[in-house]
Length: 304
Image (tube, rainbow, N blue to C red; front, side, top):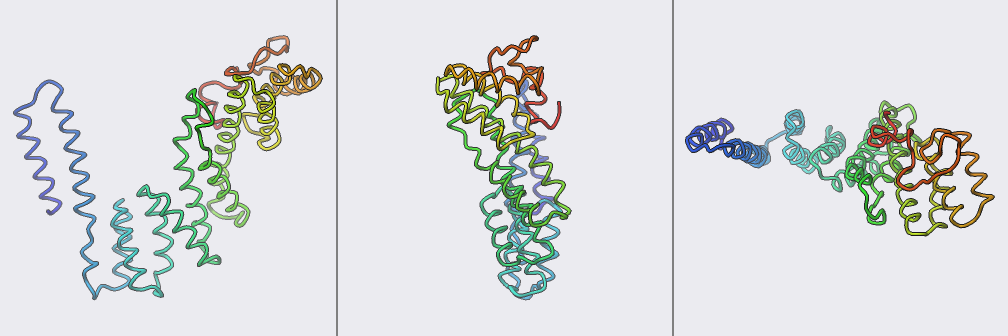
C-alpha cells in the first residue's frame, strides 16, 4: 500500500470512529491507531524494491542507504547496506557500508548485531581512518544497554543486578582513548566514562550496604576499600569510607575504624554519616547526606 493510501485510510478511519466517540475512549483509540500506522510504515515502507534489480549499481545502493538513514528508516538502511556488501564486497563503498551498518544496528535497537559489526570492522580494518568511530559506537551500544541499570536506586537485592553492560561500555571507551587520544570522539567518551565511573562505584556501595544490613561486615569493608582503590574521584568515595567505618566498628576493629573516620572527617566533613561534631552516626541508606542530594544521585555526580 502506498504511503498516501496509508494516510488517507487512517484519516477516514479516525473520522468514522469519531461518530462513536465516548468520553475519553477516542483519545486512547486514536493513540492506538497512530502506533498501528507507525508499524505499517515500518514494515510496509522498509521493504526495498531495489534488491530485486540486478542492474542496480553500488552507488545506487549506497545513496539509497543514506536516504534511509536520514529518514531514520534503519531497517531499510540495514537491508541496503547488506545488499551493497553482498553484491560489491570489494567495491568503493564496501568498507563504508560495513561502518555505517554498525550505526544502523545501534539505532534499530539491535545491540548484539551492532557489537558484532563493530568487532568485525575493527578486525578487518584496524588502520581505517574512521576505525575510532567503530570503537566509539561499540561503547555507545553498551552504554545504551546499561540505561536500565539506573534502577539500582530502587531498593532490592543488589546481587540480582548485573553491571556488566556499564563495565563493558567503560572498557570500550577506555580502549578508544588509549588508541586514539586525539580522536574527535574522545571528549564524548570521557564524559560518558565519568558517568559510568560514578555508576559502577555507586553499584559497589549498594552491594556494600546490602552486606552491612545482613551482617556480612568483612565483605562490606572489602567493597568499601575497593571503591577507594579503584574509583578515586567518584562521588561514591566518601560513602565507601563510611561503609568501612561502620563495618570496622561492628567487628570491634576500633583502630581501623578511627583511622578511616579521620580520613572521612578531614576530607568530607559534611558527609551524612557524621554529626555536626564529626562523630560517626550510621552509613546504611543514609550515606551522602548533603553530598548525595536527589539531583546528584540521579545524575551520578554529573550535576548537583
